[in-house]
Image (tube, rainbow, N blue to C red; front, top):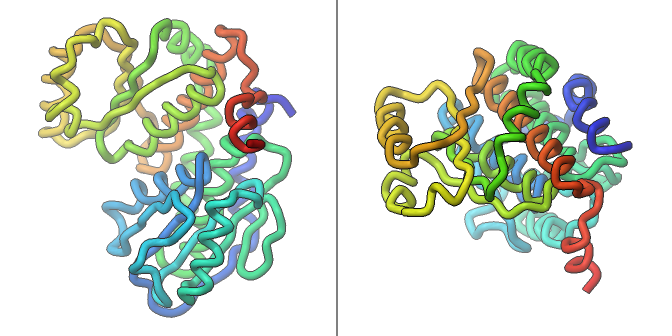
Amino acid sequence: MNVREMLENIPGGIEETIKKKAPKISGRIDNIVVCGMGASGISGDVLRDYLKYESKIPVIVSRATKLPKFVGKNTLVFAITYSGKTEETLSSIKDAKRKRAKLVVISSKKMGGKSILVPKGLLPRMGLPYLFFSILMVLEKSKIVKRQASYVKETIKVMKKLDKAKVKQMADKINKTPIFYAPEHFACVVTRMMTQVNENAKMVSHYGVFTELNHNEIESKDFNKFNVVILRDREDKETQRFIKLAKHIIGRHIEIKSKGNSLMARMFYMIYFCDWISYFLALRRGTDPLKMPAIDYIKTH
């Protein structure tokens, strides 16, 4: 399967994911930890940003070989490893068991215990939607979050309606090193956008969030050397004011607006938009998104 086919299949893949049987977690849960590297870790970032203002249970993302010290029997740990071979995550699974945490493993490889299988044969980074919605189904089944069906339905709908010709036009405007900015609640989206451009298009890129960047990065005198891409959503009035001020200083930039009513739909519309941008950038640069020579070198040495 090539990268374009993987991208085309994502909305349908979400439909299949939410039909799967998810394990139920019982008992008291004080916090949630998602451990994973690369796109697996970004699934935790998406969950954190999605639940930040919806749930009283904090979500922490761990990108390390050990879990935080606070993890214990009242912690729900999602160990995410698409390949089933990620060293850091396998180490975290052992740590979760030692700490007697509630553990759910999500992978394309059978891992035993409470787990969910996602489709094999994808680039790990293309597994993000399958990983995230697997987590969400566990949380819904365990009544940690309310029913998500209407939000998921809208999310799939807006993703299927994505205008790829418009995305390509946007990608064609990126001819310098890109910098991606977004409001703080979309931090996961610009993180994803940066890493997709890194891996698919083999380009250096950077990201920042409003309004934090207005306290440091905005002093930079080099914005004209980059393509600044600003992602917009339904910001509050104060954030809108700060973005407007930043745009005045930044000058020329590209702007992308979210679509959808629910936060989930808007978030995944933007993630999908960004995935396609990275694909079109790869085509224009003549790079093969399937090949990862630098990462392969690191893994084999």
